[in-house]
Amino acid sequence: MNVSVVLFTSDLRLHDHPPLCAALDGSRAVVPLFVRDRAVDRAGFAAPNRLAFLADSLRDLDAGLRERGGRLVYRVGDPVDEVCKVVTETDADEVHMAAGVSAYAHRREERLRAALEAEGRRLHVHDEVLTALAPGAVTPVASDHFAVFTPYFRHWERHRVRPALGAPRAVRVPEEVGSERLPERAELSGLSEGLATGGEREGRKRLTAWLRDGVDAYEERHDDLAGDATSRFSPHIHFGTLSVVELVHRARRAGGPGGEAFVRQLAWRDFHHQVLAARPASSVRDYRTRNDLWRSPSAAAREIEAWKAGLTGYPLIDAAMRQLRHEGWMHNRGRLLTASFFTKTLYVDWRVGARHFLDLLVDGDIANNQLNWQWAAGTGTDTRPNRVLNPVAQGKRFDADGAYVRRWVPELEGMARKFVHEPWRMREAERAAYDYPGPVVELADRLERFKHARSRG
Image 1 (cartoon, rainbow, N blue to C red):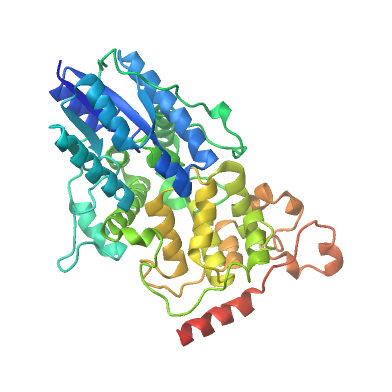
Image 2: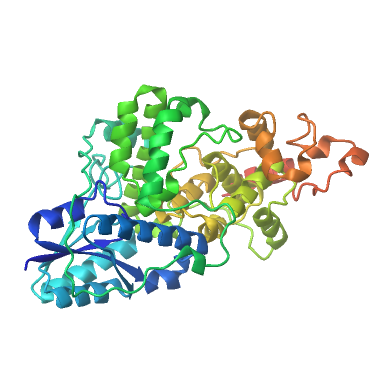
């Protein structure tokens, strides 16, 4: 019997899955396989919040396969070893998987191809499964990637996005291939209290509701912190329970300024992936080197801990950091603000802050997390690397009534609007009624320090 293996990675869905469709077209039976990669665990990416969302998504994928007559095969170990074991057990001819963009993903593909070819088997790596366009689909004349988003987006917009594929109606899995027990969210500890539920069904349910009720207002309201008008698709995109290709098509069909603005955000994601694919070291090294020096984490330890705990004395920063801890997710405007504050006000290396985000974010993605942090720090692709986002000004603009601050910093629930983003302006006797710290640093002093350091650099 002709058998193919489909190695699922960050594409935990049945709708619009090119590797699965190709395997089903070319084989009488397939083995849908997911390998819990211990090397990824050892690298520190097995954060509880992501493991919980992963467990939800794997169980949902298994349920969807069983409805079609199949099942998910789950293994733990080295993905190359486990794939080769499954190939041997089922006498499979070929393996299909989605193309990754990180240095580790490329090494995994190379190792797997070499191991399979040594046994006379074939590896098929499919582009445009994890992104709308493959990283090399659009490139400038004199480089292997775009370093600035705007020209990238002009080319991206003109490029044809492949059609979205339907989910298979039937999946036949060889009976002899064994599986370990799927993980469960209930087995995990240390989860964020408000963590979202994973899985393709949950993602598609959210997509249907958002296209009905949210897309029209997206362009106008996606920066409204209190309004919470973003799509919240990022965890589903990270785990591939929603297809970016399908999202592009459906947002374009929805039309209007909201649909266009949302597609632009998806293009930003593709942009970061093509940067990482071309410069894999940018996940840990400065994409553009700065000549000034960060403060050491030990020298800034008190301020770093205040930032992590949401106790900096700057209400908007603290609200966003508390949302992160409670939900394992943060509003995009909050991510930019907290990263700017960390790197350009506290003046600490972006890698320290990015690591904390990866410890908590359910959508913790190497391309988006690391490169957005570099953008905020001035070491990345921002064309204005000295840009500093003022948390007071940003609060008055994107949380004018202070509703977002009051939601996440309940100590300030009764504070008047005119003081909610700068409590230190109240008379001391009045401020004493609120159990809230004063500013951990002075904005003006740190801005002057930043400007001075950059002028010396």
